[in-house]
Image (cartoon, rainbow over all chains, first blue to last red):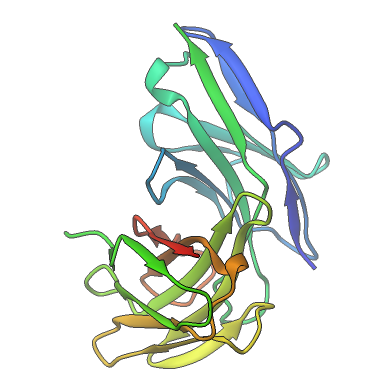
Length: 115
Length: 114
C-alpha cells in the first residue's frame, strides 16, 4: 500500500520568508512523488515531481522539493514566500501497479502568506 | 495547447437522479483519471481510462461509472444520486499510463445534490 501524510493542516508564513510544507510517504519500493497546488474554485496545478535522480527537484513558480529517502520525506520549499502563494497544497504518491496511473493524495496543507 | 476542460462547471441535482459529467483531455493525452474531492474525505481516486479501457478503479460503489471515447474524451456517470455525492469532481489527463508522467487537472465540476 502507498500513502502520504501532510502533518500540518495550516502553515502561516510572512511574505519574504522561506516556506516549507511537509510531506512524508509510505510505499513499497521506489516512490514517485508529486506536489500540486489548488487555488479557490480551481483544479489542481502541477508543481513538481520526483521520479529518480537528484534529490533536489525544482519546479514551477520558484518552488522546490527535497527527497529524503532515509526520512521518507518530500518537503516542499520556497526561499521567499509571496502573498500569491497562499493556496492549498497537496503531496501525492503514485500507485505502483504496472500501468496504474492513479495518485494517492495527502489531506492538504493550507498555506497563508501574511503581507 | 489547451488544458483539460470539464463540463458543466456547476450542477445541482436532486437525490435519486443521475448525472453525467464530461472531460476533454489535453490534446495527445490518452490517459484520463477521475477524482472526487470532498472536505471530509479529501481527494479520492475514482477510476482511470486508457485507450477506451478502464484500467484501474478506486473504492467507490457501482453507481459510479465511466467511459472513454476513441478521441480520449471521457464521461463519468453517477446514478441514484445521494446527498453524500455532493463534491468537486476532477478529471486529470496524462500523456501515457506510465508512472513518471504527471497528471494535469481540469477545473472540476461542482456537483450539489439536494
